[in-house]
Image (cartoon, rainbow, N blue to C red; front, side, top):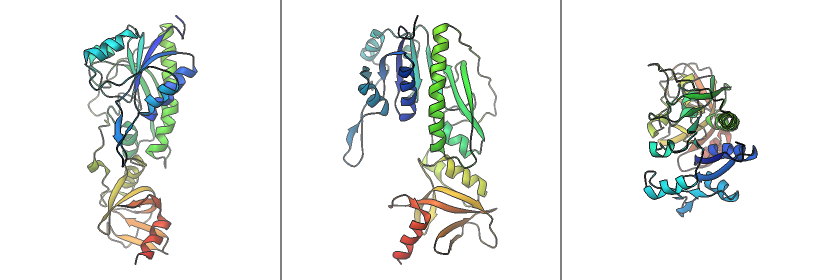
Length: 308
């Protein structure tokens, strides 16, 4: 079987998945259909927005399926009609067995961590929030429990000490697209290593983020607050309270602190905003006050001066 003869159904929704879909096509593979999320209302006008994967697929003339219910018999009949040999899943909701078990060569997923560590919905955020200096991407065949199938390939990626989740996202997106192609080439030749994931009780996990995960406690260490800021930047954004309003912090630097109370705010030379914590301080460099735009701290402080 050649690359063009291998029929692939691609399943994904956000930008992170588009890079892999593009790489699959660029390497001569045959994507016969795409499954993505239904169009959703977004923005002030609540206009229907297409997913990033759908936009890419339409531009490249690939048939698109957008099921509301993955167990719907009509959807599954449509999917079966494409006679896919293999399915690739990236950043999509949990699939029923009747879908992932459909192609004869299986369904594999790309996950943005070094499995089995950081299973779950937010591995890129959580790995930085926890102060890790290494992560990676993994491909694995789907099984019943989420993110638990046999590993195919992994690729390690170092995390920079100042790197944000957004920056790491983009690097893992590119690295992951290469790993997806490598996995498809292995499946095509039948040279697929399948290693059961080890099961350990103390492995870190990556559950979905909620608002309470984004709150910054001034009683935390400066390093912990700093890592939360990086891990939640640019989205959804770490926040605390400043003068009775929510202040999101996107970038900061750790600096020494002396003779200040925990949680105290200090404005230096009308240009620097410093937040004193339990064992140090942060100099904020990019912030967003509730109801305002994201801006450099110097511009933010200038606005404060202007409104006095």
